[in-house]
Amino acid sequence: MAEPEERRISLEEMLARPTNNYFLCINYDNEAFMNTGIQESSATPPFASTTTGPDGKRIPGKMGVKQDIMTGMAFLGLRSGFFATANPYYYRDFIGKVVDALKTPGSAFIQVLSSCQRGWRHPENKTAELHRLATESGYWPLYSIRVTDGKPAYAFQRKPTFDEDKLMQFVKGQGRFAHIFKRPDVERITHFLADAMRQRFDNIVGLAKSFPANPPVESYKIDMRRVPNQEHVAPGHGLCAGCGEGEILTQLATGVQLVAGKNVVYCNATSCTEVSTSKDNFPSWKVPWVHMLYENVGTVAEAISTGFRILKTKGLYDKPIPRVIALGGDGGLYDIGFQFLKAAIFRAGTWGVLNEDIKQDSGI
Ligand SMILES: Cc1ncc(C[n+]2csc(CCOP(=O)(O)OP(=O)(O)O)c2C)c(N)n1
Ligand code: SF4
Ligand SMILES: [Mg+2]
Image 1 (spheres, protein in one colour):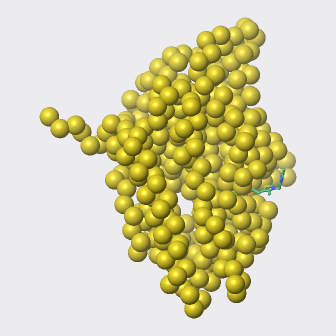
Image 2 (cartoon, protein in one colour):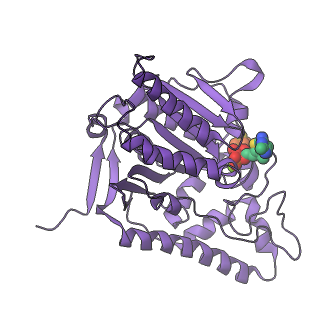
Image 3 (cartoon, protein in one colour):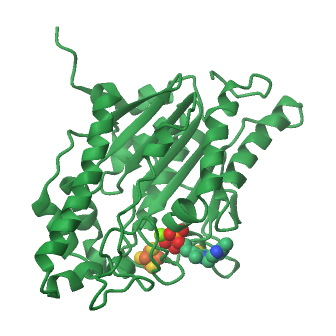
């Protein structure tokens, strides 16, 4: 009999797993430092105009490609971990990945696309359409990498395709690229842009062919009618209308709550999410939430997570160990915070799994 091409993982199946993970890092990637005024980051795509890399006569926006933050995670030499891309338009996929991450031993990192209507310069009611086009065009493929016993395996949420027409619809829908279409060399620039994005896509597909999951397509089966509303973040926050980060927080909290209830600590690097949920001494958070320096959220979150387990081992803490979720933007994780993130991911996916002296709650 032929091998099945697709696996559908049900929510119930994931929740029934005896294994647990206590450290998850979420990167909301809006492709610039938005909170401080739309400065270019290494996540910014080619030719996007930002306040530090504006469009000019000679230099048409960002000169450089969008950095790939995922591939390195697969080859850090971990024993166990779960890494994935997500997009809030595909909310079942994102919620499924959050649950999967918290039920897979080791380390976990999810990079979620997050439109910013101010920085991407689009009407606030176009967020969902742009998110959808990002994945349908191949700009933002949805995939996961499971590292098991030191070996990575790539699975896609759907068969990946690259569609240049949809990529151009995605690009034309955003004011940060508008200058390209007023230039005499528009063809050269759009060709380069499409080519850079196709190369990125081909690299991911190539890696997935070399390190395939079996089956290579994996999706989540979640009946949303049976999923309770999240109670971690209150509706009152100061994010702009249509901000992708708001959708991400709601969906993330929905997934975390399914696994952990309210036994969770969120650690938030300085960013739009942090600033907008902690205004005027009235935080939007109804569960423990920690704000720390912009650059070191990975370290702080992993240290809190390990700290709880050490206290438990010493008999100084007798409750179930909380999940610790690190939240950071592209600026805070790709750029200035990358060394902290990488080290935290490495510790959680190696020492955190292999060390038998510190207590886990169950099943690792
Ligand atoms: C060490 C340090 N450098 C710079 C800053 C200023 N700062 C705060 S938030 C931020 C940008 C955040 O960008 P990103 O992480 O992408 O999050 P976003 O605002 O886009 O959600 C910067 C530069 C800081 N707080 N600390
Ligand atoms: S709150 Fe959201 S939409 Fe507004 S500037 Fe920040 S990231 Fe952009
Ligand atoms: Mg950002």
